[in-house]
Image 1 (cartoon, chains in turn cyan, blue, green):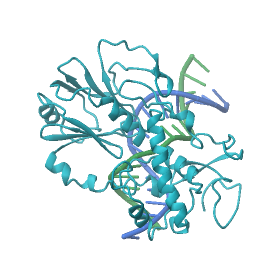
Image 2: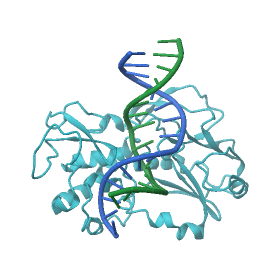
Image 3: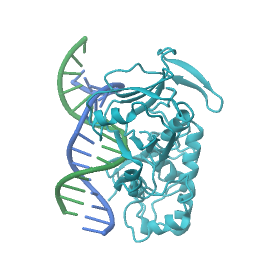
Length: 305
DNA sequence: AACCTTCCCTGATGGC
DNA sequence: TGCCATCAGGGAAGGT
């Protein structure tokens, strides 16, 4: 569930927390999330310091002196900075922008797969219930020319997020727009929630195929994606179940969702019922009135085609 | 090549 | 109360 806004919220929360503080211990247990031998990971991390923290799409990149530690949170990955002097019981926190948020710092448990302990007593904990996440370790050189970074598409908050590149990547495609938005080699960082929200804001039916979507609509989508993601970051991400930020705080953007998870409820714009269908086995939420399916108009179907 | 479907995995939830 | 089926979905792999 962590998509770009959630990963960015975690990155912002961790930035400035451990740069130039020595790593004094590394604990892990065997788990498929590790795409690197754990003894090597430990060997590399011990005595080193994290110099900075970057993000590319849904990947977090911890820059070490000679290596990059790369973490993808999958669906249920949580990355928290644990402060042993703080209590673990859930409590509330008033966020200056987003209001009251629940905080739930976890004690390490059977789902905590990696703990990086720092000289100042704090630890970076990776917890992942469903183990869809992945942890990689590359040398700087490997990271530069690695296959999966070259497969990552346009990052919406970089200078490479350009309308003409976006339009170019749409050219000659016939796939449904919803599927394309979930494709990380198209735009990096958009997942199921923000794909549905961006399509709603753009007024585009998720089943429409790219080649049938008009240029001005594609332009609108290009803008909407960025705006939707920006707003979600402002609200600290969307917490539907598992997502928490680096301090254990839940996000509050779930209150702002316009279609995702709102099936059966009235559209906030026109009052029509929000519908849920499946596209490529992904739950897809939309308003039939605000997002008309160009050409034909049929109702009552639960599936495309 | 482009596109679509299936599978992995665990915890929450609802029906019986 | 307990058991079982179902659902959530990112991305790799396999199928058409």
